[in-house]
Length: 297
Length: 157
Image (cartoon, rainbow over all chains, first blue to last red; front, side, top):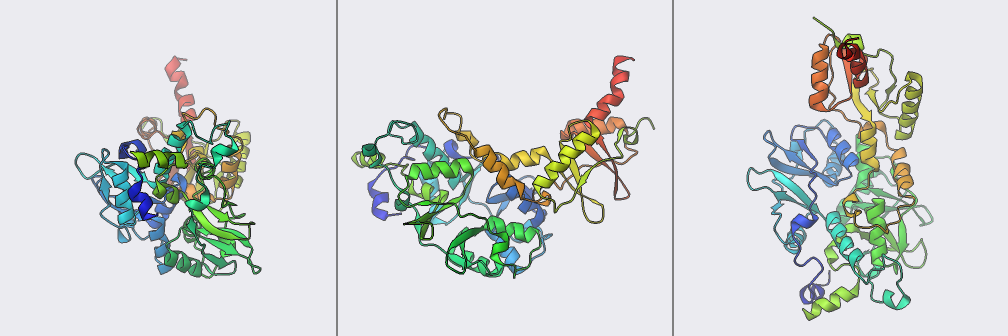
């Protein structure tokens, strides 16, 4: 995010607390559970990480899709207990903390979620992740009189609304469809990405391999040499760079899509990726009207 | 010893394999419903050696197709949900049974007293219990059959 933007402008999240965005359903497993059980839980509950707990349900650590991808790369058996790879202790916040402060912690520590601590006992009462913050932003924008998410907006109104290009992460990581899964994992780890674009021999984007696909490949026992095309999702979910941010976020939230690839002129010309994390980090809702009013505050 | 699981268990049942797709599993749910004359909402999953590997219920499938952000839907009366359910089902179709099945499955033995079966069903909120003997699945007890069995006793008939 642009630093000057962050210091000059207040944002939509100001005044809101963690309590308003946090999710109360916590997906957790005991420290002795195997990776296979963890992968099933991540898939079924559509979460990127789960909490690892001890005998008294106390929070010991976190295992994410990234950790499991690392275990797959290292060739660890699926029966390995979660305690062997968990990252702990989990980072906590309080339900009454400001959402802004929580986002600052997440950004400073490069983590994607914070657990919400109960009064005592080291147990988690909730979890705050980027998609939940985007959900809150979306609700805020939906309620607004200027929203393009409701009918009746004119061309003039649209000018004040942010476009995808202003928020997306520019650039794209791609692999050939014949690339092995080990190569895909190396590309994802090096670029700290959650998904990689797959191109055919002519350079045409033909699919996407995400960490979700990779942990499923792990669960199915696929060897590292398996070509990316075997597990890729297709077609590529994309949108033009001048699409309204609000509409893109709407599409991601309601279709359970974690990211959309962004093209410039045509579908071959992918220039970036928009994820729910990008939208959350931006913190500004979906239109410039908010930004202007905030500068005056 | 009194009545046991053996007296109420079904010994003819359909099962799933972990490598079946969700689409194939749902087709088998349908076949099992037609064959048994009652709606089948869950089936046992057996591994290649015929041992119990897990259970797949419609609850597991519902979790998969339920949108993650439904908590923000409430206030959006103008939301157009056309096609979302179809898209969610399309995404779920090609996953495998073994990707989402529940592997922590409660089981009973054929000699487990019926009163204990009822107790487990109440405490653990389960509607079906595999019956396992020497690591082999020999039957399944459905809540409806347990109720059917005790109906006469309850009515004094």
